[in-house]
Each structure stands twice: as structure tokens, then as C-alpha cells.
Length: 360
Ligand SMILES: [Zn+2]
Image: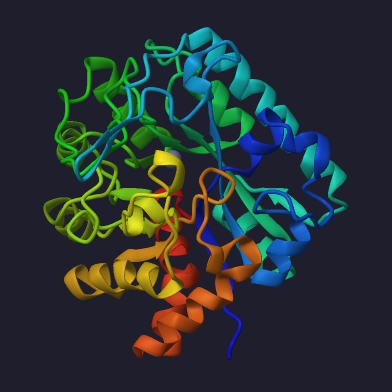
């Protein structure tokens, strides 16, 4: 079968390498069995590039360091305690350190990995088979509410910002982990949030609505001039988790010419109660393909792509790391998509969005 070049809408490798014990046992440069993404495995899977997210974790001392802190199992699902906001200065410091770390990785990679800041650079990397990374901030906590450091982040190379992670911040409200649950939790964007949307439009920074609550989502749809992007999520109708998107949201993304990246995280593809009382489960590549097919049928093939969440979540055993994209592409080929349709899902749709928002 044809090997497709893949552009991934969301991987957490920078955060995982910087923040966890992974840094001691694997590098980004050499192949490892730990974690999900490194250059050799990316090459094997056909990965051409992706959005490299920096998401500020809770401080070391926080109980919320355990992602299942405050887990409550319900009759047919679960809820997790809503984490409190982070200190902006703490987040700013963390994000600055990870950006420095990312450029160190780039220089250590001997021209195998490059952080790109414009469309031409991105296309050159893809042509030259250099893994292309776009610096993405997941959760706008490091941005000051007067937006005075937003241009500084632009200068550092940040070209994409997710307004929230699954916690509240000064700009809006992320949805807490819940199943089953609507994403309609809390109020819309704050005044600072609306101003951040305007400023990102002005600077041509991609606005990512992954994990935002319903009212915040609609505030951005009404305000932003960009196509609407949700980098990593799945279909709420197929798996009614709070962090998946509803049919109305899917339709609005299609109307805007936007893109939805489908993630591989099992509990958001098909929830099953896992072992040890925790909401973990496994899914097949075919089940992930069903979410992609749902969106393609509802709003068209131009609006669905990949947003794995590698290095940010547990992965299915069939797609255990970045070398396994071809397995998913094979399942999509089995559905009957043409080579050009598969090319759009694999990379073309993300490239279109990036070019539309950044310009040539
Ligand atoms: Zn995320």
C-alpha cells in the first residue's frame, strides 16, 4: 500500500520530553520504546510534520499532577475534578523553558528536525524530508491578559495557540473530563479572551478550539475571521465525552472552511470502563476511522484530519506510537477513500488551513 506523508494536528512530545522522567530515558533523536514520538519512529510512520504542543502541567506539588485526581466513577461513566487555574507567571516560565528546549532539539538533530515559522519553510521541510514542527501553546495561561507578551511569543516562533486546556483561565473555560457529558459547561470567553482572538487574527496565529466549552466555541465562531480549527477531538455523537465536539460544532467548522483533527485516545473514541476502576480502554484503528468517516460524510472530506495526541495520552494497542500511522491509513483505504481523499486526511487539509491563516 502507498505510504502517505502525515501531518499531525497535535502531539505533546515537547511537553513530555521536558516535563517527565522520559527525558532521562529517551531522546527525540534516537529511537526508543518509551513514549510515542522520536525522529526515527516518525520517519518510519511517514510523519512529515505536526503541531508540537506546549501544555503547562500542574506544579510538581499539586495533587492534579495525577490526571485521575478527583476521579469519580458514575453508573455509566466518570467525572474528574475540575483543576483550578494556573499562575500565569509559572506558566510563562514553563513555556519559555520548553521553547528553548525545542530549539536545542532542533540544533541537536543535525538537520533532521526544524521548527518552521512560515508556509514556505514548512513546504521546503516536507520536500527535503526534514521533520517540520510548528510551536503550539495549548492553554493561553502564559499570555498576559493585556496581551503585551503575545508579540514576544510570535517572535519566538509560536504560530498556533489553543485558548484553553481542560481548566479555566483568564481567557475562557476548558471542559473538564466527564463521560457522558455535554461540553456546554460555564460561560463564554472573557473580555481578555475576545481581545486575544482579535490579536491572533491580526498576527495570523492559528486559534485552536480543542477542549473549549460550548459557549466559548460559539464566541470564537462569531468573532474570529479565521477558519475554525479543533486540533484534537472526536465525534460527540459517537462517544459523548465532554471533550468531543457536537454535530452543531462540526457543521460550523465545515461552514467556516476549517479542520477537525481526530485523536486516537481510546476513552474518547469508544468509552469502556477499564481495569482498576479507572476509565481506560482500548480501541481499534477501525473504530478511529469511524470518527473520521462520520465527519467526512457530514461536512466533507476537506474538513477532517489527524490530531493524534501522541505523548499526551494513552494510545490504542493497534496504534501504539507514531510509526503506526500506516495502519490507520490502511483502515481508511478499506472504507473506499481514493488516493487523493486519503492524501487530504493525511496532510493536505492541514496544509490548506496553515496556508489560509498564515498566508504564503
Ligand atoms: Zn489536549
